[in-house]
Amino acid sequence: MRARQDGPGRRWLGLTAVAAYGFLYAPIAVLVALSFNASRLSATWEGFTLEWYVRSAANPAVLLALRNSLVVGAATTVIATAIGTAAALAVHRHAFRRIGAIEAAMMLPTVAPEIVLAASLLLLFAAVGLRLGFTSIVLAHVGFTVSYAYVVVKARIAGFDRSLEEAAMDLGAGPLRVFLHVTLPAILPAVLAAALLVFALSIDDYVVTSFVAGVGATTLPLQIYSMVKSGVSPEINAVSTMLLLATAMLLVAAFLLEQGRSARAAAAPALVGFGILLAPFVLVGPPAAAGDRVLNLYIWSNYIAPETLAKFEQRHAVTVNVDLYDSNEALLAKLQAGNAGYDVIVPSDYSVQILTAQGLLQPLDHTALPNLRHIDPSFLDRPYDRGNRFSVPYFWGTTGIGYRQSRVAGPIDSWHALWDPRYRGRVLMLDDAREAFLAALKRRGHSLNTTDEVTLLAARDDLAAQRPLVRVYNSTNFEDVLLSGDVWVAQGWNGQFARAMEQDPDIAYVIPKEGSELFIDNLAIPVGARHPALAHRFLDFTMEPEIAAEICRTMRYSSPNRSAWPLLPETIRRNPAIFPPADVLARLELVRDLGEATVLYDRLWTEVKSR
Ligand code: N2P
Image 1 (cartoon, rainbow, N blue to C red):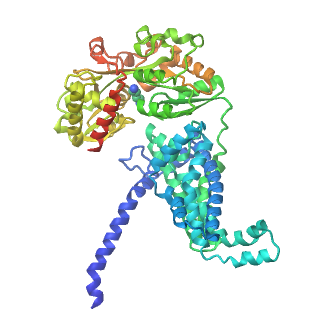
Image 2: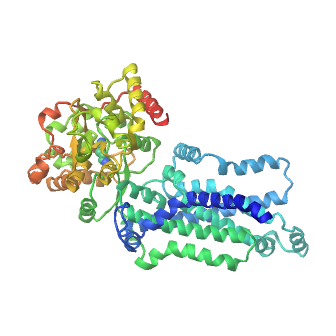
Image 3: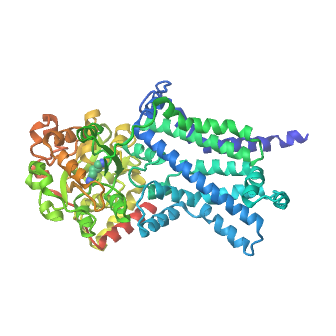
């Protein structure tokens, strides 16, 4: 009778549990499944393959990042476990008066928002002048893992009988001997559990690391994110699956030790975990040692092809480290935080002006830049950098709308298309304050450099009203989202749409009739660059006509290098998406630094995004 009564309730409980677990694990299951998908596109299953695993293990950037993660993880583990253990022993031994306060202080980093921790660590490092790199990452990781080590060790030693230590002392053993021969063996499982947990936390961390990592110290999670930005999806799935599995195994081992199981029981998962992390090095050998000469490049995603970088590396026998970003604001924030260690950066017009005003750029040595003569004079000596004292043009381009012709009613020619209710859920907007606002402002006939508050408030309301139509805000691989069919009308930059048009003739690009932005993106050398001479060589290299033509051919943004123009195929030279006609150019404006009003844009943009 009872069983029957309980039946439906129990069934419900079971179903809810399955649903809850399904919800928790579905994303992971999809990721793992897709890591074996032979197709590059996630939408179609084309059979089982291990290709992405092989490829990612042979990818030098992944290997280097994995090695960095292991080095950071190992150093963090030793330091944090030692401190955590010492703290746990101290608290166990001494009856501190304010034990509550001590415990709370110890636990704070585990509950403090990670982003706050990350930002404050960055400020601290900047204040003491610590160059961002391995040391800063390890210090930061120790900062947030020590509490976990403390908790794990403390829980296990609660029952540790101190009389053993006292007996050993009575027999004449010194404190070190007592620790090594009595205390440590007794608490070893707890210490090992803490060490495994610390290692897993360190190897997994993204948020804190992304703030405090300098160039050349890219860890695996940072590498995965930068791969996401450049859109190599199947390899990301493979790398992420491996990382997930390795961490899970280490956590299982830590859990078994914590539960008081024997070290032997925990050894198997721990070995599998470390085995996964070390396997790539066994299979394909250690990553090529970075030559002592490196160039640290911080550049927009989709802005330079690997083959072009390889040419520079070969010619000068150097290694180029590349980090990517997708907005001027990200670049400015990184440089303003200080000590980023980049040799070459790619600020847009107005950002050159901001960085120069803040004294963050080095004056260029024009005698080291003979190829500057190939740049068309119309791109030189512009108001944001008179005499090109701090920057040389790299690419120019436009903001416009890429769209799928078969999905829209007739050719699109206006910013209004991005507010057209027929495209509800099929609109993509750049994830960038100035860019999104320029669409709203131009649509109503205003300048994209408007600082008038009433006009800007109205633009904010327009952008907020547009939100239900917007599928996603994306400044990285917006052209892929259009290609995949997920969106039909997308705001974005010309070069990537020009590449998409090549892959799918159903895609078109238009610069709306109300006008838009013309940007000039430039190479510059930040103050504090470690390799300024090599940086000049890189600048000059990109201005060689052959190289400039290659950069334009591969990336499809517009080249300011007039000696490169004759080297380009007709299809590029005559493509209005890449080189628009004069009447269209006449409708374009450069974005200017708006000084005080920048804060207003930021605030209104946050309001749009958070409403
Ligand atoms: C490259 C974006 C073009 C830069 N991904 C716009 N300034």
